Image 1 (tube, rainbow, N blue to C red):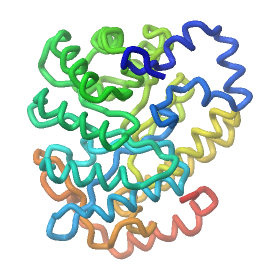
Image 2 (image 1 turned 180 degrees about the vertical axis):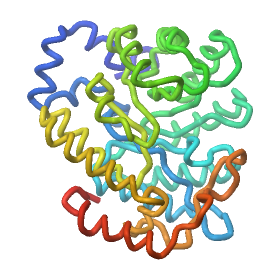
Image 3 (image 1 turned 45 degrees about the vertical axis):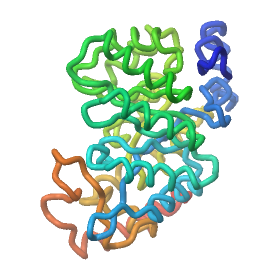
Image 4 (image 1 turned 90 degrees about the vertical axis):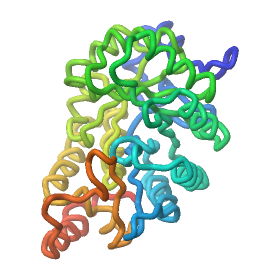
Length: 337
């Protein structure tokens, strides 16, 4: 998988294979063979929720809850987790908290891949490299970083080359703000360890097909936005999404059906996912309702969002009861974890 210390992603496979062979792989359920793999042999495609950063009521990191979150994903046969990113409140984490959280996640063994977020405040290269080296030490399956804002393409490339040198792991790039497709393509050519783009810059439904076409199929395209548009994204060739954790097992089931050619079942499962998320506070409460987090747990947020993470109006007992009812009744056939 490695050549001269560089991760060999699926670039050579896809560029040397004809389109018909790729379609056949999907139709026969063998598409997973074409997806990039981590050094640990784990598939880097499918559902990779952005992990929460659960804390005790006094806002102290709860490493036991972090581990339970990873155990939940393993039980749900979810592809992996990315942590910490925006939904994790990465900007609020101290170095000690980041390290403790990463160690807690890495301590859980199972099928779910672990992709660690390594961007640091101010996108300091040395500090981000230090996180990347920890990711390597913890045997993570990959790293992810947001593209540094307000810098030139050359600086973006230099930043990701530095991360690559420190980690020697597959890289996922989170595109935000005004990051262009041109920048992403130039970046992927300069840093072959990049295997996937999580696109949140502009409209992913417009950008994704361009990334796939212009990369010659060498890049995976993931989405954000809570996974709310994943079915139409899969129709366009997306092979991953980074939703919230709470129903990651349901969304993974939709992805698995789709990859096996069972699109009608994928559509049905995705519809159940959307219906549940229409309930007020559903995403905020679902992991408490499913027994992963304590009732009084709070989730860390980035400083600009205010801490801890809460909605403007607190969840009511009636709303909690409705969420639990939906899980026990309407969602029960779809839940795996």
